[in-house]
Length: 272
Image: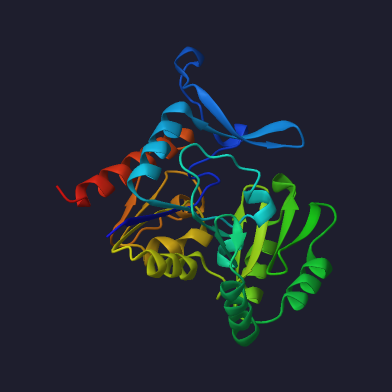
């Protein structure tokens, strides 16, 4: 039986320059591999050590990149190692098989959303009406599934975020603040549901997961074992649960540690 590893990407395995958290002396900083270029500029990185660990993991387990990114944003990433057969995008809204979305899965997701929560248009109208142009830089709709704002974090009123979270909760939506982005995501739109579907298709009997944000909590809880780094929304809230390991490492070194834990757990369960 294969081991399935479903991992968040941004600020879990890959990092922007601002999120690398290179706190050591410059001469001791790890060598970095650029894994994403956007508009002709390098955008996301892993350490070279993490790149080798991910390559080893791709040979040992079914590795499934699991992200809130849209398909277009995900496809900019060039991860080391074997090309993953499965990838989860748009927070579970799209299941990619060999790089192509599975239409049956997407139709099932859309049906759940229509049945269980307020429509996207209602959320979008509320964001347009209440978010101030003084601190909002962009309004975005992702894959016609959820909304997010790009904000000036230092100008963002904390109370507004709290009020939005309460308003959204009553309509079956979740709010997550990640860096300069505020996400509004339907509760039935989950990474965990898509992970379970990949586990069903692959026959995996052990699922491992990692993530740093509120939108990763359901994924971590659904896996047999999970890890979170020492940074991010979950760490800020001191969030934990049975079978979840809270790691002390932050930034790019947390990405290395997570991959080591994945490999260790995978090899421990491998037949001798």
